[in-house]
Image (cartoon, rainbow, N blue to C red; front, side):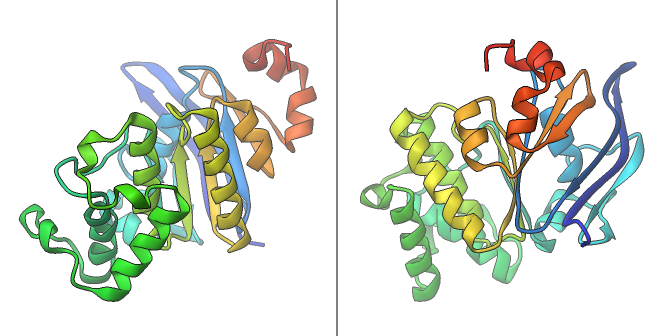
Length: 251
């Protein structure tokens, strides 16, 4: 079966420092694939290469068999790749509902100007879907409030809603539960399980091992810009290289 995403022999250097070295990664359709590793392992750099924010020095990235290396981020997004960033990227002066409706309009109609966003509430179908997603994420009661007042954890959930409304074929999540309470983290885990039931492929970068082992079908471990292990969560948990490099032998 052809992978949804194939990172083929990718290398990336910064001022002579090898951030990614010979990365070969295949993401199977409909699965949840976690990427873990210590700080500085290259995880976010890898996602930035996948979404076109960085260009690899060598190698290529393929999405559904098509080479997407060299495409701009919005072009990759239009193909069906959405990303939840490590630092939430929202419109703080717009309501939560407007934040979620905006990417749905952009997906349907193409780029929209910022000064148009406040009026994005007239399409009943888009509005209903946005309200439903906000409800799933526990944000419905705040839907008419400006997003800038949200807590960090709620901003992360809002950005996840902004991705889900686009119906991506591949969802990339960079620390999706960072800053959340355990209650909100568990709520997000349950939502991501529901998404998996719909067949959406997900790649998750996450430090919280509870999240990783609750969701992942496959885990890839990076250290020093290289893949040091890959397998099921249990296989990775038992791997002594992983315990030494990341889990500290305590898991």
